[in-house]
Structures are given as structure tokens and as C-alpha cells.
Image (cartoon, rainbow, N blue to C red; front, side, top):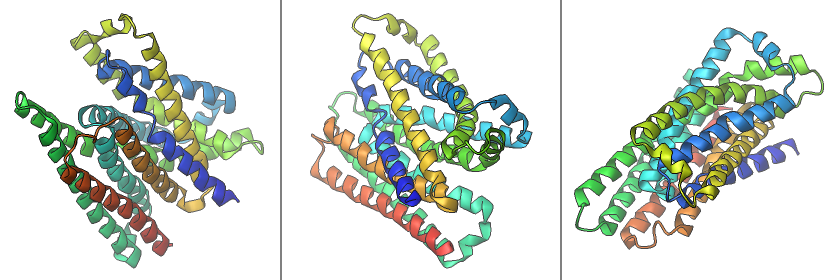
Length: 344
């Protein structure tokens, strides 16, 4: 029953992960940084603070009982993920929900699942399971390449004759940003995995009434605090440099504030559910749970891309390449899971 609940939580988490950025497409009068800053404040500070205050009594004492190196490592992994979150938002903005989600989450899924395993047991790559995982990485590269080709064909078919070179450069930059984001964004899973001593300190402090959800919240708060720093810095820079902060007071943008905070609410629910689900999946939790969440997120992200018409006018060849790349990325996730099964 515990395994079923863990898988269900990971699936729902994937649905939320694939959906949280959709409201951003409706804030057409704002620049990217206007929405992303409010989302970051709600998702990384406001909601986590409320949750941790309600569920984790004596948080400062828990941190005092945890080795300083663990706290620093969790914060820094969170900071690295924060850089990935900034580039994640930019990638979606530049190349669209469907392609952006597929490329970034395809990379995130494999790297986020592999790195904890490699750090804890690097010799595993020499086994049969390790060879399967190496194959999964190659499949991921192939999937990302196909998706990139699909996006290039789509852009070529959609852009007008004027401004063609500028739009082409924007797509190439956006695709590169997505690849970088895929690597950096996986650090959130590393923060959760290597921040396990914080959760253990929380269990010792709270006692028998401490659930996995409550213990994990102490880890998430530290990791998300680190993640907030680069988001605040970059969005703040853009708001000042472009003077886009003035758009917060623009006419007809009252609902935009709600959408930005809704994004934060959806995302924090996603990450809390993932933590609860991974904790119920035993020692494979941060691999299996992560893979399930990311596979579902890829599918949902693509569904939103179709709903919002991103591929409506794309050439058939672009659509075929996109489907092929998507299938390869899903296949890579399955291979990683199979490889991990062989290792155990």
C-alpha cells in the first residue's frame, strides 16, 4: 500500500510539474521577469515558510543539530537548482512549453536520477545495470537532438521572412539555455537526497509524531531558500535594467498577480508531493519517484503545448520529429529505471 501511495503521489506531482508554468502564457502584458519574480517569491519563500512553520516545530534547533556541512551542501544544491529554475523559465519563454518541457525534463530526469546513484556507488557503472544506464544517457542525447531538430523545423516554417535571422538566433539560444537548465535543475533532487540528515534530525526532534512529510519540509525549506537567491538576483536585475517593474501597475493586470502566485502554489504542491512519494518508495525513492514525476511532466507539458497551439501550424515533419524525440526521452526514463532495478 505504501508503494502504491508513493507512485500515486509521484504521478500527481508530475501532473502539477507539467502544468505550473501554463498560467504564465496568459500574462501577455508583462515581461518574463514580472511573472517569474512573483512566482519565485510565492513558490520559494511564502508557501514554504508557511508550511514549515505549521509542520516543523523548532526548525532552528533542528538545523543546529545538523552538521554544518550538510546545511551548506543542501543550500548550495538549492542555489544551483535556482540557477536552473531561472534558465527553465527563460527556456519555456523562448522556445515554448511543449519543446521546452521535453528537452529540459528529459535531461533533468536522467541526471537527477543518476547522480545520487553515482555518488553513492560509482562502481555500479561497470555492472549490467550500469551499462543499461549508459545506454539511457545516449538515448536521452538522441531524444534531445530530435526535439531540437523538430523545433528548428517548426521555427523555420513559422517565422516570417523579415526578422528571420534574429528569430533563428533566439531559438538556438533558447535551446542551449534549455540544455543548461536540464543539468542545473536536477540539483533539487540532489539537495533532497544529500539533505537526508536534516530530515533525520527533524524526526529525532519531533519524535513519534513526525511523518516523512514533516521531516522533508525541513530539507525543502533550506534548499528552496538557496534557490530563491539567483531567481531574485536575475529577475531584479531585469526589472531595473529594462524598467519593466513599471508594468506591475499596468491597467488590466490585476489578475496577473493571481496567476503568478497560482504558479507558485501549484509548484510547491508538486514538490511536497514528490518528497512524500519518494519517501514511501524506499531506498530507490529519489530515483524511481524522480523518474515517474519527470516522465509524467513531459507528457503533461506537451499536452499544454498542444492545447495552447504551439504546434498547430508546424510542418508535419516537425511534428513527427517531436513525437520521435518524445518517445526516445520516455524510453530513456524507462531504461534508467530498469538499469536501477538490475543494480539492486
